[in-house]
Image 1 (spheres, rainbow, N blue to C red):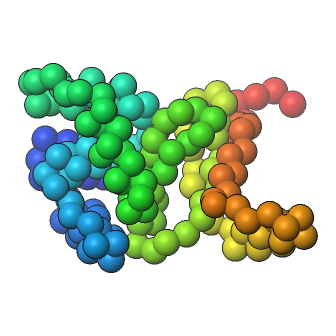
Image 2: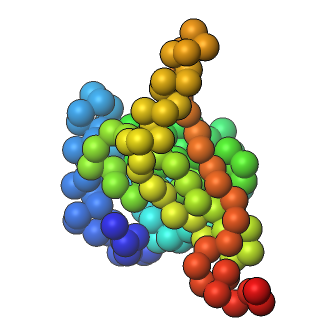
Image 3: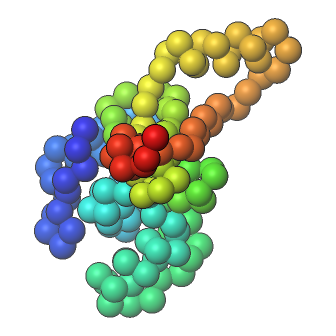
Length: 158
């Protein structure tokens, strides 16, 4: 799914409907403040840190915003499956397919910063089997693979 929502204009109807649907499934409320954080992230189309997000929101809203407020909104967006946290980069990224619950894996370009979110049921099954073999019960499995995206790899000499 391409991230195309508006910045100053209202969030694109498609994304807003997906967000509202996910929140309703979880019994959560999508407040205007939470929606503003989500819309700003979608408008970026790339991973953003919490402090970068705070700066963008303060600029757009022309007021100071407490970091704790933004972290709470990010926690909400993660809990509802609308956003992922990239552990290694300490950034946040809108989910490419928030229409269904899933475990995601990420391919992170160490050159340009591009991130691809992928779903692999085979990898999920493998991790689950390994955990079972060790009597381990994971809360979640975060897989982040760093390397070069196709564009950057094409520009590298062999």
